[in-house]
Image 1 (spheres, rainbow, N blue to C red):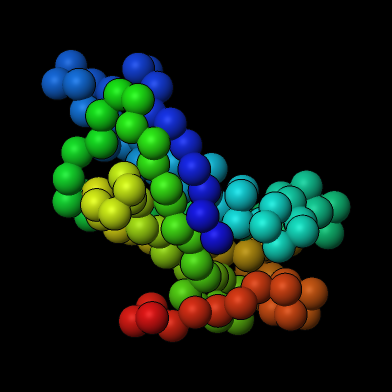
Image 2: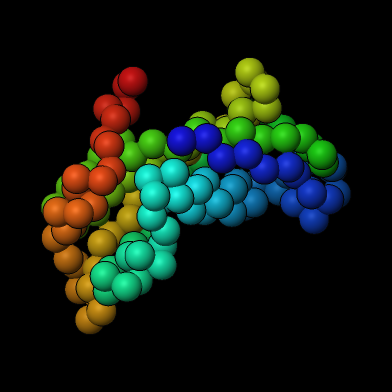
Length: 132
């Protein structure tokens, strides 16, 4: 799935480049778009009493993004375990790769305890090998 966003002035720092932590916000927007692309949303997970907190995040910065750049964030699920999954992101400006990263999410129930990923999610989410 591809999420497109334009860098706003508030995303940049004093040097005129996107502040490093904002890439995690871009990842969040890309995850929401990913679910919409599958015909679902985070609201569907809430209704199923599932939460997916981030338990690990990583971003490798390669080139700076700047104000008014249009970013394309490719999102894939590259790992699904019993009670967790990993989203992988590639941030591009046209063909230039600006950053690559991932977030790992626990799948928890309403009591805050790990929950085996439900079948509807396993059936819905395509898992792509990290090397693809």
